[in-house]
Length: 125
Image (tube, rainbow, N blue to C red; front, side):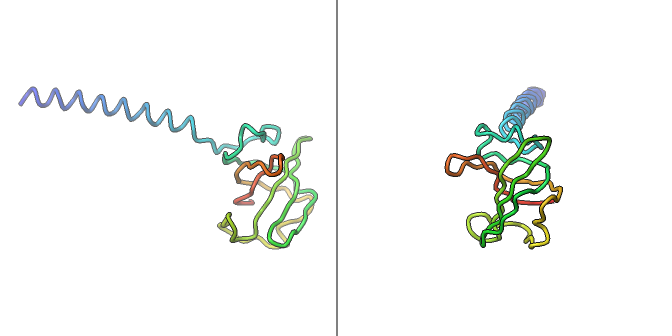
């Protein structure tokens, strides 16, 4: 019986260490933190990011909104699909939400479209 307890302790220790190693590996591959607009590059394609800035060049294209996000002299193109399509949004935003000069925080995914880097917004705060 004493041998079974020691074996169980060893197995528990091994599982704990392996679990910690797995958490470390997974945490290094998941990236969803806030970044500056200058960091939005092709290296972050398919990554989820949060960025803040001021809306400029706001355009309603029917099924989507396109605008630039400016912050500290940097700029990034942002696309927001109006529900449906391949990107289903958690909230619907109206015309009043897309105002030139509005300060916003965007949570979205970095994508490449026609050789250009853009952020496909999933949430606008």
